[in-house]
Image (cartoon, rainbow over all chains, first blue to last red; front, side, top):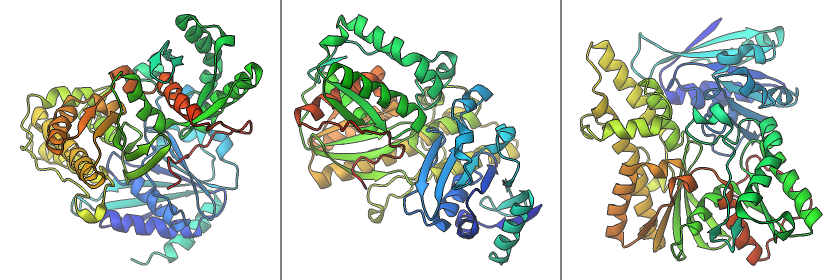
Length: 158
Length: 321
């Protein structure tokens, strides 16, 4: 487990941008954190790092957005999904094609549906800081993800 | 089934059972497999209710984006097959543009140029329409959609589904200035883009603060203050656009158009601007087939036929912007 302190949403976006710059094709980012924690802000940062020029918005209601950066970027949100059957109909597995980057908000709701190799990021309120302060808790699952985390942390010397 | 772009012969919506009732409306993005099961019965039902035979259809319109590609493909493939088999023209309609055309089914005379504000769970877009097929997106949300924050605040307050109406109801008895919530991106430099994510966080922070200090959250006041913040931004940005583009009408579209405070405030403000506000009835505000039919009719009149190679486009933009 690796933990970053972020003082603001701008800093969260910047930390995520540096991840976006180094993620390789096939990377799955599993995001969790309560409402307003900054999951979409994090996704915006990753997209920025991937070179996506479009404005990245919350996919909570439409379930997914697709963006083109240096890699295809699939931005999912399980917020509105409550049953496995709803997830099945999304055809999620087809997007884990090894060629794109997949980010899932509220991933913990259906973590069994995600590939075993993934970077889990949980954003929680930092009780020691002010209302905007967050802790970004990163858990790499699989060797490849440990390598990515190492590279990412070297690029974020805050 | 729509006649001449203005009269609904039938407008059948797949209820998709409990799945969608929980969301307070149709969620076409879910269940592409369910789409596949339902599409033929829906077409049969629509024909039966309209009293029209399949062979009497003169053209077919289909939404090809934005949305989930799996669900869109079911519609696009079916429409292409039907158009080919019946040898009638096929029109490809942008889903958002469809929402605008729902207003053409209200019987009101539509006058260009006009503005359309699409506010739903998935979209918050201010669109300028100079004529049929000439649309420009003036602004859109940079993070959360307006309907989405209504839903999320309602969830944080455990108000249940659907969240929007629950908040609107509580807000009626509340003090809209009890809490001071931010109105984001109101400066001229932001033009007509929207941002509701900061408001969402501010409301959640307030709820947390009240709880930490052992105070009972005054739901009515919180809901009224929150709703006022959303409505203020929507109304002011729309007024800014109405002045800048000298429009004569404003069309409201999307599920949030059903919010009575938004309607009231928008009517008042637009009256000052000399702009007529048109709102379709609720069943035409949410996703439906008739609006796609209306849009398709006007595309047909302009000779904008789809190619037989038409494909679904998940992130389709309204004006390529």
